[in-house]
Amino acid sequence: MNLSSPKLQQMIQQEMNPGEQLIWSGQPRPFRLAKRAIPLMLFGIPFGGFALFWIAGASGFKIPDFSEGGFSFFPLFGLPFFLIGLGMVLSPVWEAIKARSTVYVITTMRAIIFEPSIFGGMDITSFRADDLADISRTQRTDGSGDLVFAREVSHGRNGTRVKEIGFLGIPRVKAVEDMLRALRGESVR
Image (cartoon, rainbow, N blue to C red; front, side):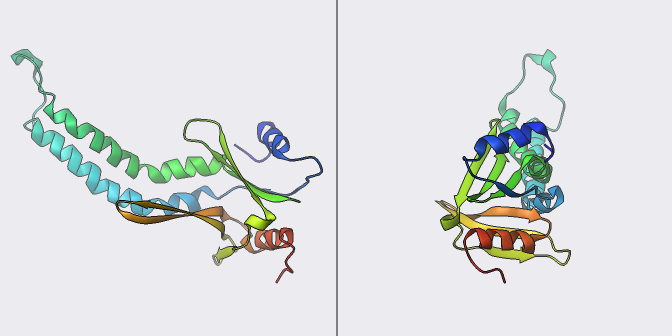
């Protein structure tokens, strides 16, 4: 979805409150978000490869022959693991596709993230000025970078996982940070 798309412009306008004005809008660079998924992809290669090897081993390393009275379903138990591994290998592609449909917006009242939902539609997350208390910036040499202003912590069997929420992979990250700080009423550095 392109920032100039009428559908996207309409979605942004519908989200805005009366008296609220658009200050900035942008999208993440697909390559930057895809690059974050490389560790998952690297884990998915041996994971999916082992599942494929298991399927082949369980089938006796031969193509099934249905003429000899049926087919054993035992090798198919490895199929879900292979598909999970394939999903991991393709995770950079999914992240790049997601980035093309993600939009970041700063208005006179808040910061808004529009992200495509897993089940279709858009997930819209809004952060009022008070929610932007802890802004951290990571900047690259080309001026692009990440602005993180929220963290989502989840506890599971494998430990604690922290998901950073903010404007990720954006160009001119310092200028966008200055806009967020101005929204909070802070003096710009």
